[in-house]
Image (cartoon, rainbow, N blue to C red; front, side):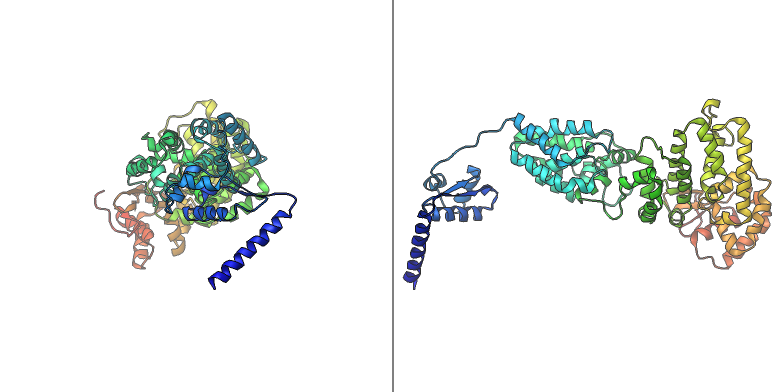
Length: 563
């Protein structure tokens, strides 16, 4: 049976040889990237070529790195691998070494072909940074056109998906690492905090980023030692350029915000986008933020998309961080929209929950956005806009902050030094009119009870306490009768302070109670609500403090002993 099979193969071989001799032109078989195969497949491919290499009119062109192929053959018990190849390969040609100048030209061409837009236009420092990353870190370690192609092939796949979300210079540097130092790239992907200094579960009350990142110093050193010594210094420099914290420089929490603003992967959020090839479900697109600012007709749609507890706060934060100047084409409508964001149910939900000590909260962030917009306007335009905004009852939470800022600038109420007349938003003779208009609008909100649904009732109430304390008893009195109204009203006392023991706590000062009516009556109402079994612990803490004047934690309504 074996002889018959052998005979059949021989006859087939003779048939193929006969057919090849009848051809009028040769057949050339190109086999590229042989050194990219696993050793087993390299061995099988060389054997296959050897088996058919004597066919007439047939030539084989093999492209490979000699050392790798010889090592693959040696691993299959071929001791003289070099001589073994000589029996198969008749002519060996070493490819000429390409010059750095030509490699640079090729990289420039690939960059031009990557997109028909300016890839560095989204972040102000990106163009200069790209030059630095390329010339100082990447260019010295690029050895072949293949490496340039591989880097840009990754960029073709990734860049468009996250354009405008991550600085192109950082994306380019990260993808260069993926090709030239894959073990380091995998370490970054598996443990981003080892490079950004931010642990997977962020708790800003524990350790500083520079302390956290130092824990992984030995791990990073081991990864760098895997790199070819001739390239190790450049890879290390590229890492320090992308992730400055690993160099040991001082790095505070605000730097994360700054890096994020510049699209740099030294910030945890930008790095996450880069290594997941797109926006995570809880992340916000900076492109959408910019569209929201500049395209009025798209605001409602964009806001609706991000109107969730896991995204709205980040959306506001990026709006504040992402622009050196906030110049919407319609500043009045934009600011009204910011006021509406403050009054969203999702904003109220976030603000009602306990927060970390350093967290700003969506209301304060919205005020910072509004203040930034107002600051960019001309003095006359800003003054006119403030008067128009104050007349909008549905945004009294926002306008309470505007009034507070105007008063602060005049050195009234606040202990801060008053600003020079030229730096104030309104003149002294206009301040009374503005305050009276805000008091009128806000008083109406008390009477209609729309005040009870405002997001920042506390700030509104205390501004009224400072500006119209004589009117407060008459305005607040009707809100103390119904239990639901009373429960809603006393939330104005919610944000008193917090400590590291149990977080937020409440203390109702007697002068506040005196400003809104009969203290004894208020304490009696508080006693009634406690006896009724108020379930919300924060609300119960408020009523306990009204009744006793002591401090109580909002988390469990327990008394704070050490005050």
